[in-house]
Image (cartoon, rainbow, N blue to C red; front, side, top):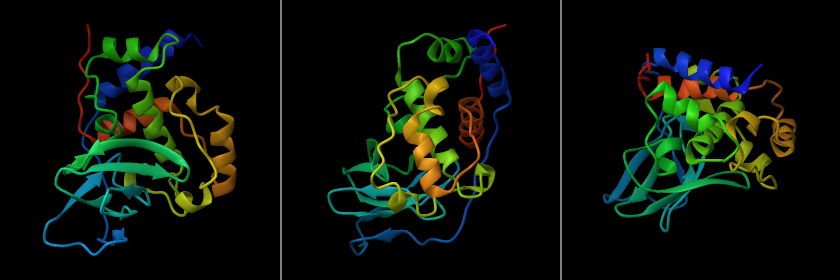
Length: 209
């Protein structure tokens, strides 16, 4: 299938984006005792459970609400096993887009332009992060929240590159190995991942017609 047609179709499906999410109990694990000055944020592509976070004073795994702890002004680094997803200033909500310091694209044309071509851009990387997290969801249903299970431990020796075009991400040898180590058999395409994160964040895409 022509790649330009595929990316146009992705942009078109994103036009139906709406709110999504998940939830659960507050069981954020930290290596330091939260204090009155400790703030709580959430990592969202649906709430992500089991994502490693580190700040200069806090560390642990996100809970079922995707929550992590930080102190005001601290940067938060996120990992899945040996893969560093990115670093962002602590805030109430962090998504794959804000983790890369970008805003989601909101027009079909901009989305298609970002996904086409051969040069890797920040939009590709954001979609790759979403694709990875959704792929590793233990019940393969990100609509009810994303649970990474024991992925952080099981993938300690794996480094999966985000620096590839989104349309090629799922074919990486390192991702195939990661799926094998975690017992994941399903495939999460980048277009499904993009549609899901847009739905979860309540982002509407404008048609260029």
